[in-house]
Length: 481
Ligand code: PA5
Image 1 (cartoon, rainbow, N blue to C red):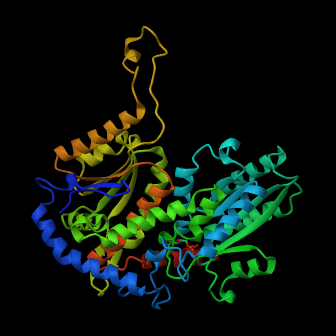
Image 2 (tube, helix red, strand yellow):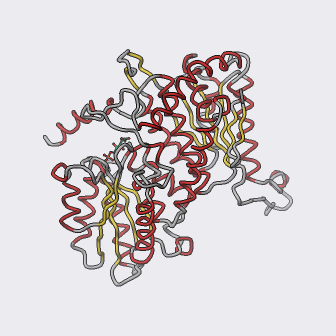
Image 3 (tube, helix red, strand yellow):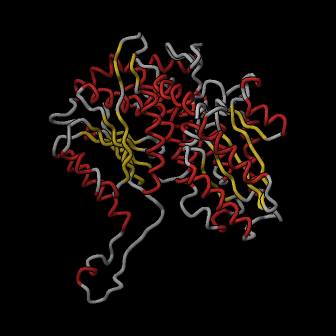
């Protein structure tokens, strides 16, 4: 069994610190791999072949397919086809040529993946750096909370930009993009209503709309789709069998890549090559299966928290995306045979080295119920070596020659070593670089791992019945006031 695997792409997974005294034993893991691991692989093959996952039902109790493993393959009848990718490319050009600002309006699976793509590939200074944008619009996210302050501040910013003549044409053109599979989610729909109303009557702002929703739904059930049809708004599809948290490789996620001129093909290629690798590997060399199995086994030893700790400030949104993927997919009351299991781990987002000054105390000395999942970029492509501007100051002389990216790697290694020295669990993923291709590999790897763990734990990784309880109460209260 491999405790550390380097894929042909250079993406590496290192599970060394899951093993050792007081941690997992290799012989036991090998035994489990042959028994429950093999069973999980069979379950996954079945989903691949048939699009059916054992016991999976939609919210209304009818069987629902699971097609997320088809996403990386651009093929007729798949979630991504040559036509759908061409449409996204045309949309990208349209946004670059005609649109000054895009506001994406989505929540949960209709938001988190988009924010990952934006934070990692566009970054903090996209909106203020026209040179970096190469004509692409400014990009904002809203509708991911019931937050009046955020909505008002967002609208003010658009009005300010319009008033200062930051537009391509005479009028500042804003593209509102509600993303919602159901088309009825409170947060994005209320923000969409607010922004449309704010901008539609303006003399300086022109508002356009693109709707991303389930286009196969009965139009009578979708007020958003009715509006889109009446007003001839451009639409993108949220395909059947692709749940929100598994959707970043399809239209609802790819529209964000379109808005920033990202390389859609490279993103899908990363996922595709990762999928091929896992599909063809023997169990002991399948990184997604091993990742799932080790986390499942430490769960049996009482680890019910997973800290996703990416070493880069760009990884905060990625951690938040992973929170939803893990929590909604595996946090289940019953298994697929109806047995009460209360399965899952509580996901926590941490950023290294930032949270070494906040959370690490708890990781190192608190309850032994955590696995710390590290993520590292081997080469950020940017070097930063310090000089000493304070000549004669011996303290700052020490900083002279310090390379920050090397220091970050040392910080991660130190954290890992300290945890291991106390017999605590950690694992590390390493991405050679940070681009569309490797991001595709990582996001798809995480989805696949979660799907494998669903098979291992015998829980339905594709539903989220636990969110219905609060939704029912909230809706009845909101429409009362
Ligand atoms: O994963 C999920 O299914 C949820 O988090 C949804 O993505 C979220 O509730 C948003 O739903 P919708 O896309 O229907 O607006």
